[in-house]
Image (cartoon, rainbow, N blue to C red):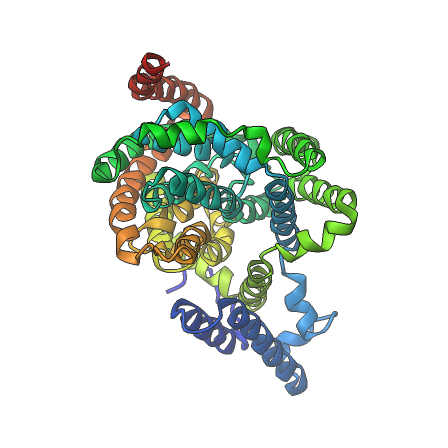
Length: 486
């Protein structure tokens, strides 16, 4: 039932739109149809529903000034779509320059054949770059790099890919550009409240991301201990003799990519403080790359994952229709009635429920549907202050619980393993992902309750001190072993 004084916001188009949305998502989740085609078909079907409503003269269409389909297109988050596309262009240019192969050789050399050391090194690298690249871009960088290194050293690459995809999911949480859901939720907060959470997001989650890394990596090493050993010294010598600079195919693109990444880091970090949003920074750099490449621009454009781009367009259109018909407002009203004004209940609800949904559904539509609820004006200010962080945490962690379906990054890793005819099975991913996911959800719930009770800055300062100490203790054996080998 509605709360006292609240009325249904859903108009007469709500039921047919909801049926189209549910049917589309069931078809996508079945994996028996192309998800991009299905998302676009669902968006088109809702366009026909709105068109029919205009012909029938339904009351809800009287205020539409730009046409039935234009109403849907208006609600597409084009800045997010452009951000994802721009990042794909940047990654394509950097990959073509040989930058990632260069980095791979630089990472392999210090391991001196110790596969556990190499494993930890790769995960540390993922932890770092996840702050500046979205999860899909991170895995587009790491997956081919990892496979090539593992093949050269005759190591099973599957433990590496699984661990990297899980790590990039939780390591991306502190950054607004770390995952598309982060950007969607942060944009919703800024649109509804005028508040930018870019800096707060970093302060709230950076210590937690490091702590989750320190907790997760030993569990990875224990779980995959039979997969690790020491690479034959002769093979390591062959790899060590390769000059990393020989991997660079274009010095111009290599240096341009290096400079661009520095600009990205600076722009993403300081731009929002001056009103310069990440999509603008990424778009300018991507456009510069295309101009610089000139005759090769079309080759880079062909490497963009256009299926992902149009999948986003379709999803935004579907969720936009839920907003137009009032369904999102109704969901927000009933959710607020459940969580009331209790901080513990509200935080726990906004972590565990979206996480469970993201375990079976793609975390992007989950974040799109629930983002308006996280900033619902009917909730107390103390609760709406913490709910966006809870939702961002939930959809990223939920991406690897029970199934790998919740996060596109997982699917990228699995796709690369299939190309090598050594596929990662759902069960193989789900076992370690579920174990870690529940541990992470428990730690994250306690962490956000502390933030809600004591404030962001005190928890950040104490959390960073704890995180740095734990990381130093964890890394000490690996640093010692490396110095002894040297």
